[in-house]
Amino acid sequence: MQTFNTNEMTQQFDNMFVAPMRAYMTLSIDYSEKMLNAQLDANKSYVDTGIAQMRELMSVKDATGLRSYMEDQQKVAKEFAERVKGDADKVVALQQDFLQKGQKLTEDNVKQAQTAASKMSKTA
Image (cartoon, rainbow, N blue to C red; front, side, top):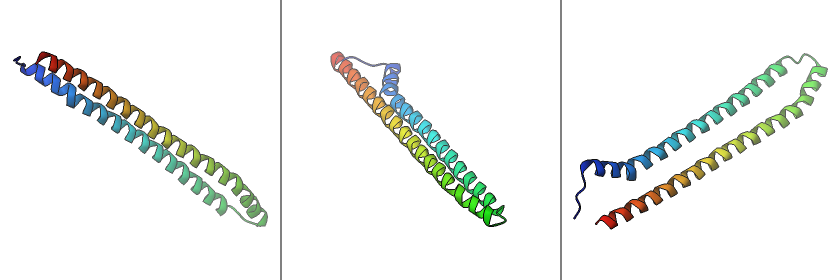
């Protein structure tokens, strides 16, 4: 029977459990930060658009100004819809990236565990 020293056991524990957990937590934190920043950017854009539209409406003084404001609303609505679509696409891309990287981490960890188990069974 082979004996393991404390350093080998600590290294194996780190390789099998701590390092994969740390890698997944790093991925999760990075994803959360990117998602939060995307949401903050989108919200700021939506608020800025709404405030700009309120200010424009407040500047209407007559029927001609109201007609011009109403005609501009189609353009604003189109731009807003494009922004929302772009924001949704960004979120989907972030989610797909997170899933792909998470799958890769899992695959790498399974391979590493299989290699370690194989080494352990050969030395036993």
